Image 1: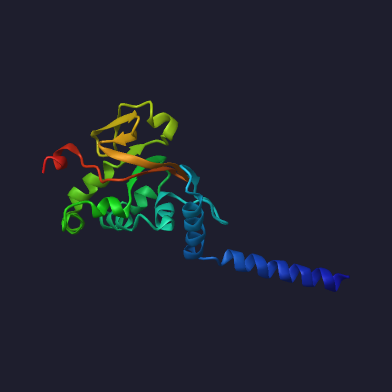
Image 2: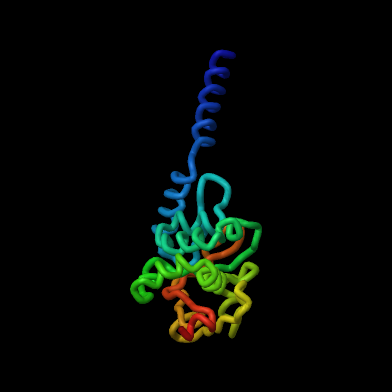
Amino acid sequence: MNKKLTTAAAVIALLFTGIGNLNADSCSKDAAATVQKTGDTKMEAKTTQKPMDIVETAVAAGSFNTLVAAVKAAGLVETLKGAGPFTVFAPTDEAFAKLPKGTVEALLADKAKLTSILTYHVVSGRVMAADVVKLTEAKTVNGQMAKVSAGKDGVMIDGAKVITTDIVTSNGVIHVIDSVILPKDDAKK
C-alpha cells in the first residue's frame, strides 16, 4: 500500500512539475484561444496560471502586434506590467494599418512622439464599459482629455469606435478600438 502511495505521489509530483514548467508562450496561446473563441463583448483573459497583465493579454490576443511593438519601442512595457490599475483603449493591428503609409515606422523612430501617442490611449484606474458610457471626456496618462461619447453608433473615444469592452487583466482593463487616437498637438499634423 505504501508503494502505491509513493507511486501516486511521484506521478502527482511529475504532473505538477510539468504544469510548473509551462512557459509564457503556451499560456499565451491558451489565453488567445479563449479571447478569440468567445467573440463576446465582455471577455476575461483566462489561463491556467496567474491572471495576465495588460501586456501579456495584448500579446496573447494576437491582434495587437503593432501596439505591443510600439509599447516596447517607447519603453512602456514595465509601466503597463506595473500595479496600475490602467484602462487601455487598445487599437488593433487593423487600426494601425489605417494610418498613412510610413507613419508607424516614423513613430517607432521618434520615441517622444510615440510615447505621447501611446499614453493618450491610457487612463489611470480601472474604468469598465458601464462607467465609460457615462463619461463625456477622460483624462489620459498623456495629460490631455480625450472626448468620449455614447450613442446609437456605440461608444466613441476621440472618433475611434470601441469594438470590444471589458477585457479584464490583473492590472486593469482593455477596451479595443478601431482607430489610433492622437493627442491634440499630434492630431493637427
